[in-house]
Length: 220
Image 1 (cartoon, helix red, strand yellow):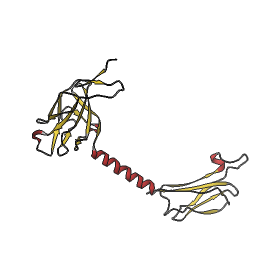
Image 2 (spheres, helix red, strand yellow):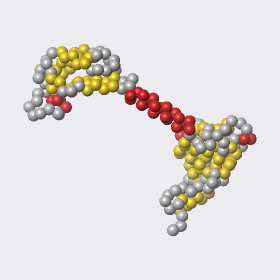
Image 3 (tube, one colour):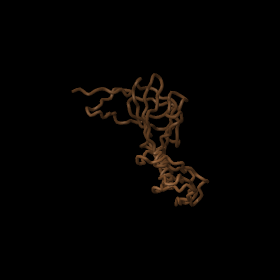
């Protein structure tokens, strides 16, 4: 069975298992903000191979509806793909910096434009990890109080919630009659808070003899 062809500047075969087989990346050097590509994968060198960073403004070469994979030639010299300055369009309409030699950008050519459709950068991974860590910390600092089944007295009831401070994200109560968990014949009780909860307790009243549950949420 012949291999299918994949357009990436020049035709590149795709294996029978669907793995994209690009030619080995060769170095291409930026010249006055312009990079000329001759195949589907390139390592990119800054002009003069001296400066710590260089702007990539325009890409020439390639084929419409073709893909291009770029990565820095050296992790000592960053490549900045400039959004909208030339013919490159980056995700989020912001410049994309490839700072490590294993940072990667995948671009797709539409007419005269090259659109960044995917990228992997160490800086992005670090930022995402920091965000996840912050979210995990916030989740860890979140406390939820859920009472066992309680019975209304018809007067104010003081229910300890056991949280470290007064609930900040909400407090609520559910009667068995209202949430569908009650038995046939249960009455639908009146239930409500008599005052705002404090650092120790929830305050509410419920029809005498009615079953209910109290909840409170504390979040960082």
